[in-house]
Amino acid sequence: MAVIALVTALVGTTSVTATITNYMIMVVSVMALAIFSGNSGILSFGHVAFMALGAQISSTLTLAPMQKAMLMPALPAWIAQAQFGFSAALAITIAVVMLVATPTGMVIRKLAAPVVPIATLGLLIIVNSLIIGSDGVTRGSQAMYGVPNDVGLWVATSAAAIATFIASLYRESAAGLSLRASREDEAAASAVGVNVPAQRMIGWIWSGAVAAAAGALLAHYLTVFSPKDFFFDLTFATIVMLIVGGMGSVTGALVGTSLVTVLIEILRRLENGFSIGPIDFPQIFGFTQIGLCVLILAILYRRPGGLLGFVEIGRFLVRPRREASTSSTPPAEGAAEDTLEISRVRKQFGGLTAVDDVTLSLRRGEILGLIGPNGSGKSTLLGCIAGNIAADHGSIRISGREMCGQPAFVIARGGVARNFQSIRLFANLTPLENVKAAALQKHRGMSLVQADAAALKLLAELRIEALADRRSGDLAYGQQRRVEIARALALDPNFLLLDEPAAGMNEAETDELLSILEWLTQRRRLGLLIVDHDMSLIMRLCHRIAVLNKGQLIALGSPSEIRASAQVREAYLGRRHSQILEAAIVPLKQTGRA
Image 1 (cartoon, rainbow, N blue to C red):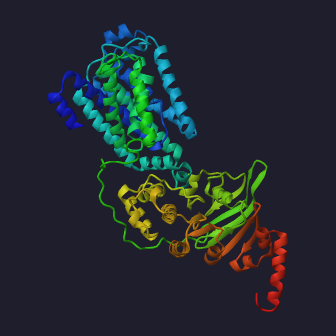
Image 2: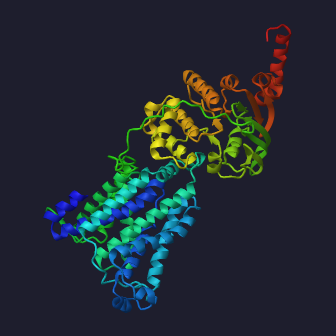
Image 3: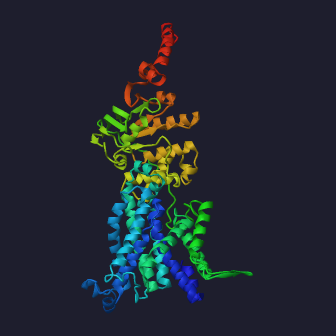
């Protein structure tokens, strides 16, 4: 950026200097959008509202009292008589807009992700309407003029560099990593301890602050503006810039801003008519918007994630090469009361009872298998324990603490980790980032360097440390399963819930997983609750086995007891086939051949 500004200052014409200055301000506005939308994956149509407020507040604070009395006669006296320099006005503006962003963020955090874009569009319309309707306090629909010209090429360039640094810093921070995890899979992020609503609100407030700065910069560069300058056209331009480059990376936001700025300048010059050889094209109203629409359609058709997608070309934050901790001290043994107690848990979906008054207990250091026919309620029970599914009735106590009804992230931080039946990794993050995201939730004061070391150590325990910097979505199935287990272990849990951990693995991979799970159970004194249809794995691995059928617990005992249970055979085979099997087994028992 400094090079571009220096070249422009030395050899650029007035027109080029204006274009580059405007480009730098647009970088600030796109970085504001990238902080929230790029990390959360939720598109916002409302950030230009923060820019409008930034322009309005900073202009009002910097205008001379005499001019304010003429332009905005209804201003409160204490504002009308005050006049600040640009720097002070900018600081006040950012603070005020952050205050405005806080209550709106409290609303945003409670909304489901698919409806947030509509809510943000409503925010844009509300702010625009309030500015237009507050004639006397604002200029209404009329232009605000006489704004001090405090922003030039170097101020805009400095602001763009700072905004890019802030966006990069936030992306690589614990908060940014947590928000990126929720972008990939909200349920999985909650399961590793991420408070998704809180992280969205943090990203929203910080992005609002940067957007307010962009609005103030634009106002003090233009010196004359009206509410229509901060409405749909600017919203569309910033969104196109973010999406075209790739909203998943800061570098993509920079590339998109550069490309779209150049394209806009070209299209504006062609909008009044142009010629190609002997063919004359007339003036085309809206030619710039048409060109941007064609660009975004073409880019998204060829590259749905934008030109760069989630790729960062060069890190703005240089971090030292990570090394796994060499400590091999096992975790301390749990106390006797470290037990997961499930008492009369029930869950219904409409008229279907998926889990029906199930009571179980699991001690640390024990492996409990949970089996049953398809649809027997195994995964639902795991979801109730982990908080992903709200139980209708019952008690779930972790080391004596009641957890039933708590959100998933609270239960995850409280000592229960899980995987999912279908792999739910953060596909566009690396295995290292997957595991680190969980470690940072459990150990809130952990630095990023410490989190890197802890994550590498866990990947080494699962024998996949060589894959630390690969994209998780590109790994083989068995490798992804191991990353998911390592991510769960990063929570340093007392209890680990595994839903078909060996599904899709071949025999060699399954045997290796068995040895890893046995080793982890002994070393970490984990309580493992495992759901799997592989009876060989369950019988070899588990100390006790619980059997569900139609949501009810029908058997609980050692592998040999479960193997001999007629009720279990009936649940799997049906009564008629179970009786046939029993009739065939009895003579074999009598002859000693069974």
